[in-house]
Length: 173
Image 1 (cartoon, rainbow, N blue to C red):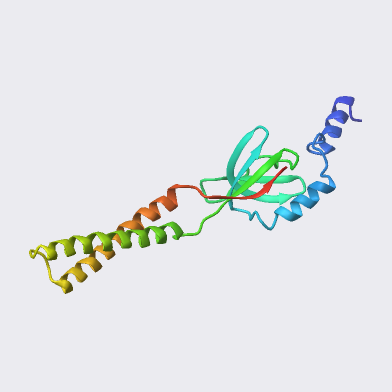
Image 2: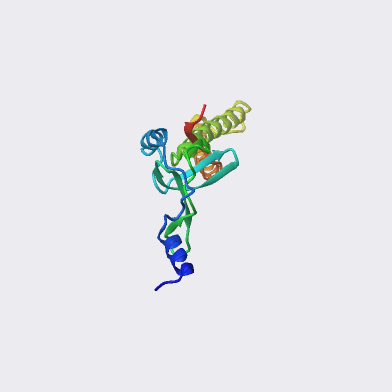
């Protein structure tokens, strides 16, 4: 026969893992079905709750909430803990990246500035009679535009990689 302590231990082990966790409501199921297509697993997310802001990688979206993932050294990711319940989530932002968008804008802006500056300088020098003729001034302007394009593209790419960009997909009102 089993003693009472062993029976209590077996009863505790046979019970649900976390019996204090609330069951998802119908609202939670609807929220999960609406937000699941907007938040892909592995996507960078920022979740604002009444306790603060959590930033990381999204796991699964379920009626229980949004699960965050923790990166491991071998390239795999594991759940960081229990999902964040929908009742606690006030706002979800996803990382929005359009690779090269800012770099393209920087390249265009740099090319225009370089073209204007070098063409203006060559034109002023030719008016004084000490500078290049029209063909050389045009070549110098094109060279300035290409240089500005490259510098603007590098600066834009740097800004694109360092400044985060977020898109709000859910906000509780």
